[in-house]
Structure formats: C-alpha cells, structure tokens
Image 1: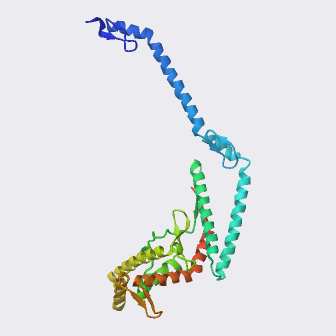
Image 2: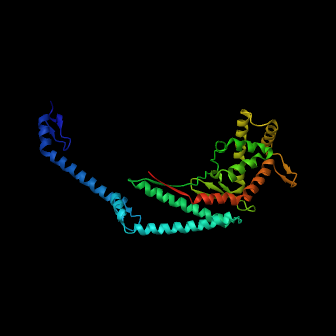
Image 3: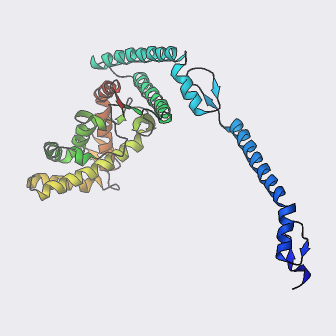
Length: 324
C-alpha cells in the first residue's frame, strides 16, 4: 500500500493507514466541523429574523398599531378600544345608505320616470356593497375561529350566463311560442322584465345614446356597455332559447301546426342578416329582420326600465348573514 493512499479531505494531509487518517480527523477537524455547523444555524436564525422584520407587518383593522406577528394582531383587535367606534361609524354609514335607497325606491314605486342619474345612484350603492362584501370576506378569511359569509339576497345572474330554459315553467314556454313572430319579445319580457328577478341584468335609461348597463356578476354591479353590442348578444342568446323551447314542445306534442309554422318562419327570418326588412306599420326600412327586432326590444326594455330597476332596488336592501 502506498503512503498517499489515505488523504484528509479537509486539509489534504496524507497518511499511510486508515486508522492514522481517522485519528487525524478526530483530533483536528471534528471541533471545527461542529463550530461551523453552529455558526450556520446562527446565521440562518439571524436571516429569518431579518426577513420577518422586512416582510411581516400586520396592521390593526381599527387603529394604527402595527404588529410583527398575526396572532398578536388578532389578540389586540379583540380588545381594541377603537373597535366599537369603528363599528358605530359603519352602522351610521349603512343607515344613511338605506335611507337614500328607500327614497329611491319610493320614487320608483310612485311611477316617476327613472333618470340616468337615479340609476347611477343605485348602481353606486351596488358598488359600495360589493366593495364592503370584499372587505368582509377578506377579514373573515383571516379569522380562524369563525367564518362569516355576508351575501346579498339579490342574485342577479351575470349577463350572458343565464340558464333561461331551465328557469322557465311549461306555461311560460307555451306563452312564448304562442306569440309566434313576436316570440322573441315575449321571451325577453318574461325573463328580463316580469317574472324572473335573477335575469334583470340589462338596463336602458336612454334611447338616444349608444350606452346601456349590464350586470357583471364578478364585480357585483352594473357596468356601462355598448347598447348595440348588448342587444345583439341578447337577441342571439334568446333565439337559442326559442329553438330549445321549440324542440322540447315538439317532442312532447304541446304546440299546434300553425304555431310550428310561424316559429319556423321566425327562425328563418331572424337568421337572414343579408335580407332587408320593412316594417309596414311604421314604414321604416331596416338592414335585416334582426335589426328590426333589436329596435323593438330596445324600446321594450326602455319602456319597462322603472319596473326592472324597482325590483333591483327592492332586492338590493335584503342582506343575508350566515355564520358557519
């Protein structure tokens, strides 16, 4: 065996036997390794402390105090002297909003014409409620003891996400098809104006401009949109609904031959986008039959704006609090 068969990996010294190398490591390097390990642990701990100071700050929800640890913040918030004051202020703000909303509801119920300003006031309340619910949700998610879900009873479905056919009764489906060439107007009247509050997600406050409001369920309030675009999409969606109702009632033999023929005629005409159409009663020419129907539905929604927004305002005030 050669002299240099056993080398120290720490200092590169060479030994003749494994026992000699072991004695060398035990005498000269074991303490150093232990000290290095201890030093590494200390450095890691110091780094963690520095990181905590830089990255973890928790503010009290009721005063200006700042805490390094979340648990300390929660314990403080339970007895914070500003908590009651903050809750009282929130109650006053909510009461003022309820009074404002009640005045708006009375105006609508008295049949006064809805102005764009009035609708924007109501929509502003929806925005504030959506914002408050987001804050409450975030606060409650941080609370490990209780989960409190605050939900609005108004369950307006986002525009374009409606499941109309499932929501309609058999009687309503028959009423829609029995209107024949006016089936699209009847469908929108039943779903968006009269019977189903969850589908009151379009509001038209003015016939002159090209703006409308549609409900955005991801935000919790109405957003401004192109009147032309939203009416085109509404017509397209409701044509699909009529086709589904037609197929369903054909299978169950619940419509007569004359109604069948008229619904077929409607479906053909509404899809002929390159064929001009003239309204003989008003002597007005339209680029196609679909544009003619869009104009009819625009007027339908505008004339019923008070009814639509009155129901939205009524639902707006009803909050449901669920503690899990």
